[in-house]
Amino acid sequence: MKVYALSENLKKHPRFRWHPGGTLFDSTGMADWPDDRFTFRRLRDGDITLEAPGEEKKLTKSKS
Image (cartoon, rainbow, N blue to C red; front, top):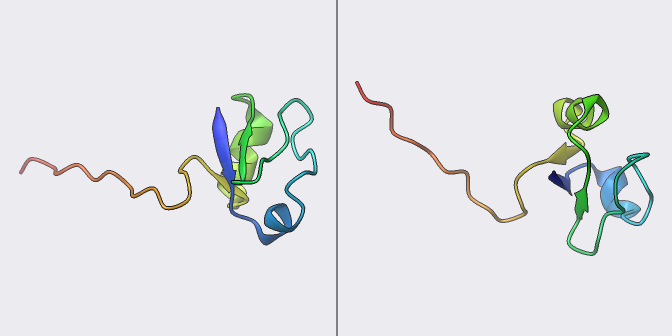
């Protein structure tokens, strides 16, 4: 799964291999990590996101 760095620490050291089984962060802050507990923990902690920088969240209207 594609993940993007949010943490300042990740942004300062993008070439550091944060995930033991994933790829390094590239110059855009994107890395390819497996869909596992380690990744979901980093998502929960706010270190990474699944949304590309500048990508707007797609909102869906709820039917009332």
